[in-house]
Amino acid sequence: MKVPRSRRRGKSHIFQVNDFRAIGRAKIIRTEKPMNAKIIRFIHDAYRTAPLMEVKFEDGASTLLPAFGGAYVGKIITYLKEGEINDGDIKMLKDMPPGTDVYNIELKPGDGGKLVRAGGMSAKIIESVENKTTLSLPSNASITLDPKCRAIIGKVANGGRTEKPFYKAGNKYHLIRARGRYWPMNAAVAMNAYEHKFGGKRRSTQHKAKTSSRRAPPGAKAGAIAPRRTGVR
Image (cartoon, rainbow, N blue to C red; front, side, top):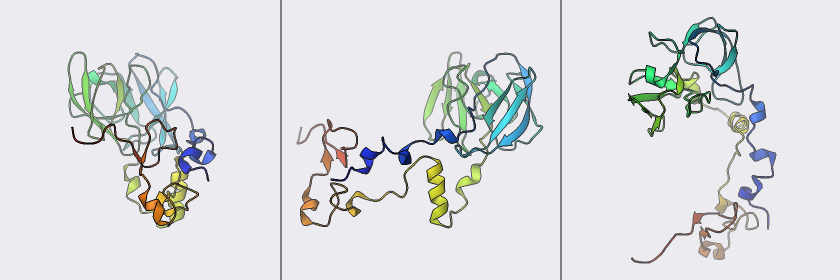
């Protein structure tokens, strides 16, 4: 029998995440010194859905960050400074009022930013108290973080990327391939009998169980997972 697609994912370059395409790490620098920073240039990164901006700080340090909507070369942003709230400024969550849109949010203080980094995305601060800050994520889920976690004010650039039609299958193929995903995805019932246990046109395949054992190895779990219990309580 042919090895199913789900089992081949660990051994083929087709299914691997193409992180080698990334230009570099996009993280907030580790320092608590308030200062200004200047946007030097923008970089296209095929690995990401939004452009990167190179930011240079007053102390000479530079880093890459996901660009925000409305950014331009030469714009001055502030880092951990008190005062006005402007797009692109980097502040702690405790220093932002409720209703502020933020992105590149830290899960732990000092990790550089982990949440909300895709193009056009942003989270919203719901409330902030002494030892916790609650945010609403783009998925409408809520998360509570340390108020000392840092984030960038605004929304990630390239928000209209999903509005442009693909026009042809080749464009969709190259987009999905850059993300390290497999496309197109054929239905199991449309395959041949030797390619998948749901494949084939024989009548006997229609009566096969569509559930897999919970103890089955990865790749063998095709279809629904076996129920924990059956029958009437």
